[in-house]
Length: 132
Image (cartoon, rainbow, N blue to C red; front, side, top):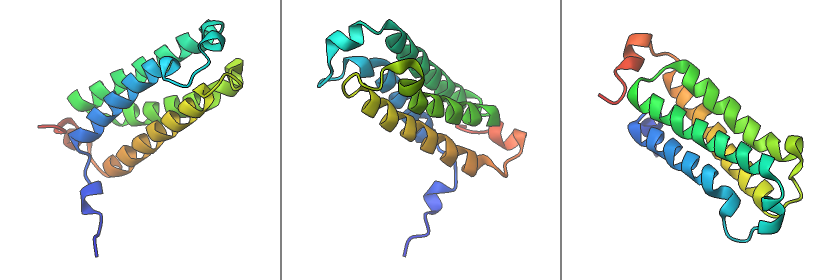
């Protein structure tokens, strides 16, 4: 029986996964099976998506370079915003973008929660050794 010991340590692949998800968020308005006319008419949704994707990508890069706890909390908050943004901004009826953002936001939140759980008991000095 496996004890999931590999999930107890924050590894650099998790940061790379966060960068990949950030890039996917940036390009999500142009995924296939989209109503491109509806997306083109809602520039706020597109700008929000690009901003959120860049924040996820940037925070994941910061975690890779110099890990700190605020980065994981920021990842969770940005993921929650991505889940809520179709309803707050008003593009929840625009094709599959709501589904993409809910799914990608859930991945970001779960990744942030996993990383926060892994690093909960680490000291600041231990966190700075991440990736070395």
